[in-house]
Length: 114
Image (cartoon, rainbow, N blue to C red; front, side, top):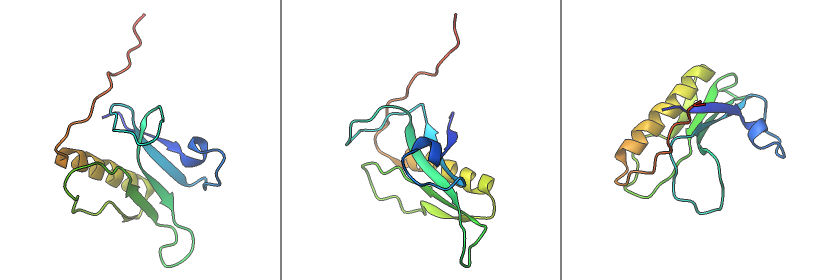
């Protein structure tokens, strides 16, 4: 998988996202759309918690929701580091896709052929 991350503020520049919020994308898959959009599929995100008992921890969530049986595992949580939170997003996303009865179209990998 070639999942990549971007600052959420760069993805949604008209919003007021923190500089410590990041969104993950999967460029290799296309899910059914309810809204007309183009581009890589957003699959989840991580965000630094500021204030409260969890101050300094990283919140993560896998945001893909597809038809099929209910997914019984957690799709969000908290980790000590941004890296650990990001790995959880990817891990849960990969497992979630493996539980779906339908396979989704894969986009061919881009090559730098001349």
